[in-house]
Length: 128
Figure 1 (cartoon, rainbow, N blue to C red):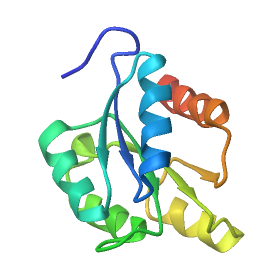
Figure 2 (cartoon, rainbow, N blue to C red):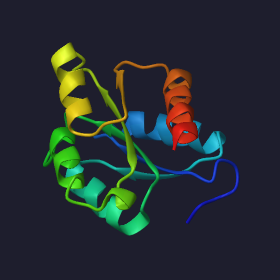
Figure 3 (tube, helix red, strand yellow):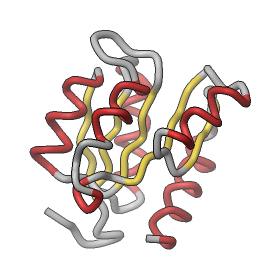
Figure 4 (cartoon, helix red, strand yellow):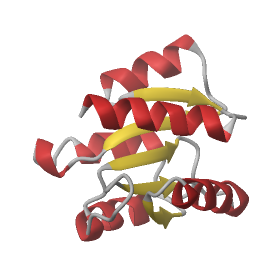
C-alpha cells in the first residue's frame, strides 16, 4: 500500500468536493498516495480498507462529524489508527482542546494555506 516518494498514504475527509480535490492534487504532487471520503462513515470504511498513515479530517460533515470519527477511531488498535490533522472553520480554543483530547495530532483552521497544511503533515510524518 505504501508508495515511493514519502511512502505515506493520506485519507482526505471533507464534504466539500473542491477542498478534497485541491488537497488530493497537492498531496499527490508531494508524493503522497491519497484516498478520499465525503463523510465520517465513509472515512471509517476507508481506514479499515486502506490503513492510511495520515488523515486530514474536517469536523462539520453530514452523517457523521469529525468528532465522532475520532471517537470511533479510539476503538481501533493504536497501530491501525492514522495520525490526524483536523481542519475546520470551528477553531476556538475549546474546539482545539477537544480535538487534542480525542487524539488529533494537529489542528489547522479553515480557510488554510495548502503549503502550511502540507508542512504540518511533514512534521507529523517525521515525528512518527
